[in-house]
Length: 248
Image 1: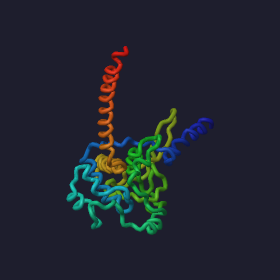
Image 2: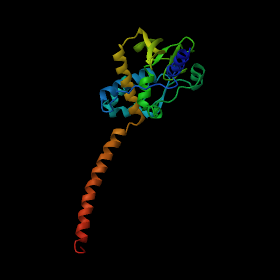
Image 3: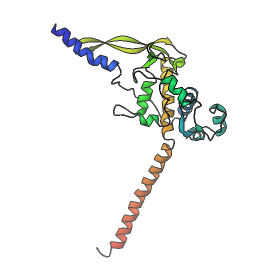
Image 4: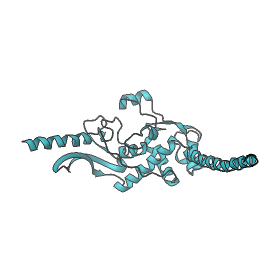
């Protein structure tokens, strides 16, 4: 009887973990210097995210920083009939969005920075979140998420990933077997698991870039300033020695 009670107690934290109260985040394999990845991510963002969400603090023409020219941006990424200098807004009415999803979809310009926490970076959170949707008939949209339980957002990338379902998996803890539910691919999508993970990494890579498009320039300027100050130290020291040589 005592062993059964202990086993039940050991099972509680496992179930809490599975319920999404605390989710171990996967490290996002992103590279801010990979312009090809950023371009693929921008395409995914415009095609799948910008229909509901907006990026009101980002202009299309900033994408020249990732290797695209204005003609390519206008022809391949601006579908609203706008101009290449326009902000990345969506056409969804906020009041209608509130009715459909329970709340207007948030602006995503700085979402990668806003989601940073002690458990991982915002990139890690997004990378894990976009890969942990699963079918849930109890939810209004038919979808749920282990990283963000009871999320109001449907799985917009389901055609690429396929459909995951929660399945029980046994794990060993202190000599006891505990059942933990996790999302498992039930119906494959257009992409394989590895291809989908790579696509999500591209999308997250772009969203990190979008949060601070000038990050690369800022870092380069910082290096130049540090090099200047380092050179200035030697110059000032040499000047000090010249002024004080007669004193010493």
